[in-house]
Image (cartoon, rainbow, N blue to C red; front, side):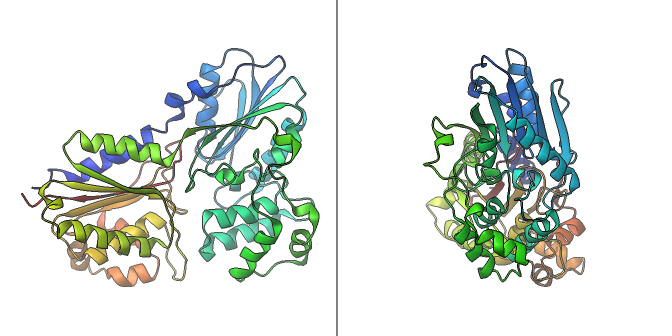
Length: 424
């Protein structure tokens, strides 16, 4: 028989996943030794302010610095200045603070330590454009990438080659100081060069790849952008650049760790757990169909169906906006999953972004249950039409099944859990 209060159980799993990436609880073992000179703390991302507060609490010695985070994500600090800016579409505040962060890095000397706190969201917040590209042009390309269905690696490849601070260029500015980077991963594969577009690490992509991505999605480029990406100046520093000798990157939280925290909690309740992966990509609705198929296989297997079962997965799916709705990859996944399951009597699911923001909405995600479709139809909602219109946020808002957390001050990407109640 299914658990009582499955909704609360799924919320508990999500909360465990988020808590596993709380900077205040995990940062201490990753801190470097204080330098002879200054300690300059720089950061960008949705978790960067919380990381800065954790560094201040644990640091033994003087420090200073500047961090940019998303609006409403600031955490009070005594010595590190926290500035808020827009995400996912950059604004003037982000441009101004990015210039200041670059200047702080450039002020570092050979005996100084530049401690960089980087997490998801940093790509939009560190918005200093390359020298011959205007902020307006860079912003418009960023908006195009958000709507066209490009995945995070593709978006960040382009962003790095249009930037004067990402793609290893912050490390160039900080040389010859020692640079230590603490990372919270929000990307499939935990590639440091993709997280926040890798401001302090070597880049494995090229300007030619950036151009090809823009061509593939049909972008119309201003002449200045086309000219810049066609020049050698647009190339980012790679692994063989001397600035990366002694590269020191420390991954403090990952999507896999978050899934494991949730799996451990489920196991305590004698539930069989299967982790599908922490790096799942693709169109959200297509991933939903695949996971619905896997769910049905479990339901049709008498051996697996003897115990309650839960499927966990992470990663970052995409939504290609073709309708008039508000997007949101987690809610789009859930609506497509509900349609594919067609009211299966023993299946519940939760999908939410661990940063508390799904797409551009201040909503983490939602929950579906066996009666989701029936309730929607009783209210006069058309699930398939709303999915076609990319309007899943409105669908779950009408049902009252949204998950609203407010800023979680961390970001280890999407969390998905499908619970299958046993037949016994």
